[in-house]
Image: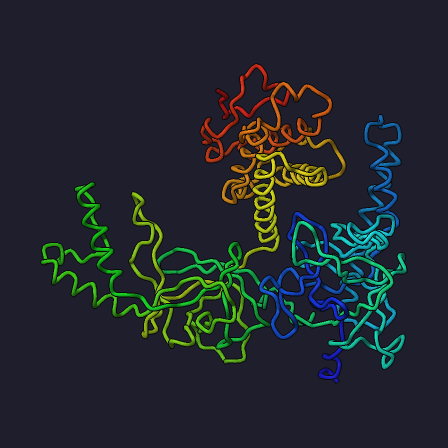
Length: 581
């Protein structure tokens, strides 16, 4: 009976939706800073899933209630700019909205594992962004104007309710939804099914718009993970982990991408920020000679330098004897770990080996210690003493290789990364790319009105992000930090967001040969109020990012737009660490 039930779709299952019709492809997104939903036909299909498959995963959720939250949202919008004459009513509405959210959470837990039936109402929660797939029947689609707009909404609303209807007549209302069925997703309030359009996005070639309109688009439900497999205490496909080498006390970082795993299962490790996969390639013996050359150069510059990786007895050996010893050491390390762009490379397959006695069918616990066996070379991942950052005064980065010997000391701790931290990284990474593109457009003065509005909204989101404050419709310039979130401030620097913010502040005033897009005196003109507001947001992001954090305060004055200090207050007061020339 349990095997029969396993073929059905359940509340809590994580699935992907593959469009089949005039356009084929998985419904996905454009990152965490863009709420549009898209289909990219060239990215992959059911046989060859897209490289960014995390963007395509949705959790099947029961229908949430939104009546009390809807009343509170309306009251909150009406309260902006008014005196608090109805404070008691506002507090009651807020309490009712919070109570409704708790009831929704309780109901979700009760219904976890229930079989989904045709014509029942569900919601689809995008795993990566933690937002609901939503149809807005009051707004037209951005490209196909006779269709309704589809996007991702953080809280969800009544537009997030979908009937699951059968596409073929072999299924009927009340039947269980079977994994692999072709279904029609019909919004409850909109009455127009979810549709993969033929129209391509202007700003993202290759991506097709997803909207809601009368159409013949069917969606194949492909199961990624069952609700029962989603356990917090074991390692699962899609979990983001850090690999911590116990002996060297240094980290590797990887993104697991497979089904729920047991010991001796095969893994690929995908780097979250770059999207590349961990693999192994031959380590040339020349590495030892390069290391020797770097050591000799360092000794010329710094007579007190001592290479701790070298045996002291070998200090006075001739060059030929020394090279021979280093070659023998290199022979032990047969391969070195590298990154490759494609996940179908056999060199990127690894096997987890337990450090304690385990049955092969046991699940891998979180935070356990493992050894890694490289599949196609049958060698074991091991640490080396070959530094990577040899140009630094104190090298801290070491190459990782593989050898034929399995040793207990070459164990890695699997350190789970919280979902909130993963989403923060994804958001910061996506925001940096958008801001970088904006800098280029501002330099040449060819930024469109919709693009400017989008960037302004992103800058507002960055203020709330770095302040770790909820966006309740308040004035963004009045948001303040009570307790700085150091990790988010660090992300602002490491993901180059601060560098792009400085670029936005400089770009409009840069002369590319035909005169600058803006002059500082133009900011007093009401026609340029939108640019003035954008620059004020940039200053606010800088101020919050450096609060109580010295590393973010060490920004050279040359990075800032040249402007007289007397003219600066018409934008806003500059952060204290910036000196204007």
